[in-house]
Amino acid sequence: MFEFILRRLLIAVPTVLLISMFVFGMQKLLPGDPVLAMAGEERDPATLDALRLKYHLNDPIWQQYLYWAKGAVHGDLGTSLRTQEPVATLIAQKLPVTIQLALMSLTVALFIGIPAGVLSAYRKGTWVDWLSNLVALSGLSIPNFWLGIMLILLVSVRLGWLPASGYVSPWTDPLTSVKTMLMPSFVLGSALAAGLMRHTRSAMLGVLKSDYVRTARAKGLPERTVLVKHALRNALVPVVTVATLIFGELLGGAVLTEQIFTIPGFGKLVVDAVFSRDYAVVQGIVLCTAVAFIAMNLLADVAYRLLNPRMRVA
Image 1 (cartoon, rainbow, N blue to C red):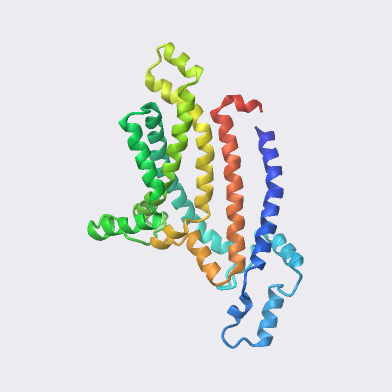
Image 2 (spheres, helix red, strand yellow):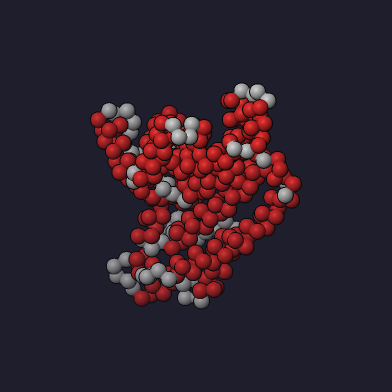
């Protein structure tokens, strides 16, 4: 297992390098000059020259990349052109918020999607199957922003059960923190559950036709044991891939949902950075998101070998 993880890490290094080069290069193609926004309305030429010299904007692009990459290796992702704060500090402030939202959304998706997929496959062709597919299609079709607004009107405005927006740290007030994140987590999780349900159903349909499931039933094992211990465990292998990629996507920031519920996570941070041409913040967030995706893929590969012993010899 250690050698497998080491090989994956060796592959991840050039991947991150290529992603960083691509992000840095594409950022330079965006129109506009961030120095003009920093200098204010007067735009004194001496001030512009000083800012360009300070942020190495007069150097060739490859030198600018090397300067940025050297700092990124040491944890220095640059300084925000808008707030003059270190990008690493901004990310450290927003990352816990996004991780909490991602974990709660993924939990909602797993608790809805996997049981619904198992029941749909087990009761194939019955009303349970049709209802599960209808719910999955609805989850994929309903826009997140519309569902979020409707939940705010119903749950917060009319019923007054949950806060309409805002964020409270779990370290400050755990119960209030969960309450503020319930609706946005359900909005994101319900859409993700639809995709998980479809993947779980397809995997279960294939597994339920396998020889070892028929053998387990022929031995007289309880149907619940057959479904959970023999069928679901093997069907979860492709579902793990989907779940880890979903979590990596959520770490990138759910822009619309965070805007609707006023959650100060990655989504709001990257939107503000794009509109203000804060290149350093955008580059830092994209790089962190790419690293998160790679880490989630590595976690998925490890989970494969834990769920399926036959893959441990590969």
